[in-house]
Length: 483
Image 1: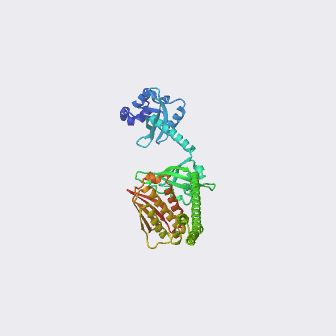
Image 2: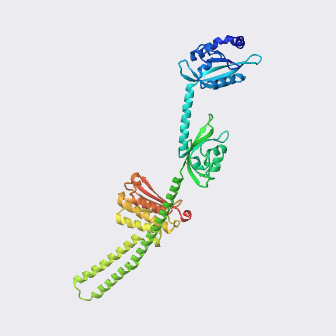
Image 3: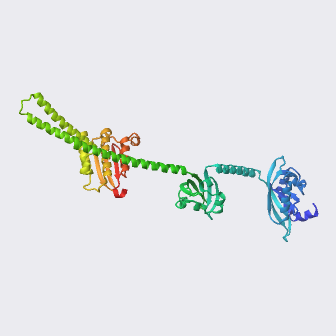
């Protein structure tokens, strides 16, 4: 060693032996970047004697294309009494090119004079390969997100609100660029519909994987509906520090659902008009049957009675008398048939005596037809319903009794009218009951019709299943509540 090198290395000559025994590659360079010392681990890694690696010899292991940059960076770092580091490619003893992380610390004497730099080298090829793979994967993911129909985002909430990442369908949904979001962390609140801005971080601490449908006011003034799937990001203390997720434009779906709801509402109004028109037509036909045909048959019966009385003084054969009596019987039968049909079309008790009496009268007729006991529970007084609601309740009652006759195999029915939040009707039988599949069967026209009648009257109908029993429960609001 020259006297200059001895002057630099002498203060630590006693630890050079220890440096040779460490598995870590250690080096010492003067202030010009010339290598003064490399330990045994360095020599073994390079496969060359330490003396050959000294000076500028160590640069022989750096690929020729990299040598100027590596040499200048090393020399520049050694000239300053400050730590430095660089990653460079170096040939290993087996000829493989490895990435090495070289770090240096300034070495000063007792007076603080900068003498040299001492440092280490670590093979970081595996780490760089992984970093490169991660970078490739990240770029691939970013490219995928950019081409996706979804908007991906990450917003930091603590310690300050910042937009850390946005991509994908950002401009299509919001009308703003990523640069605008990065420059203004409060832009999400500004670009969201005022009624939805509060949903931005709503329920994050409650629902770790929450979803929210929010409206963005696009730069062009249009409103874009987006479904946001979000999850909170926590720090070590469990505090929410960020939120990340994706957002998808569902404007088309929302508009389709809105059109469907409007169409359903239109169909419901149309059904209500048809139902009302049908009831009016039934009432008109019932009146005409009762008033016109009924009166005609009554007059015919009276005339036949007068004819029989007038002819009784004549000597008529038994055959003629039997025919006259037969005509009397046929007129009575026709008159009762007209009354029955008129009552089926529109019971006069419903129009003249009200809902309670109409139900009571129908229950008596039901028992007479079917032999099934029908017990009525009803209040002495009840808040009046609209004519449409009374008709709906009565028709639901009629259809329920029809279903009991056809399907229930019951021996008794209990009908309860009550007032709670609204007007309630319950028809419960003691028959075989009904399964969930049968209750949901789209071919169960009777149940569907009852549900529609209840809905058109502003209420709802539920089917309650019990073991060995079945109950239809209809509830209608009063007119002041429905308006």
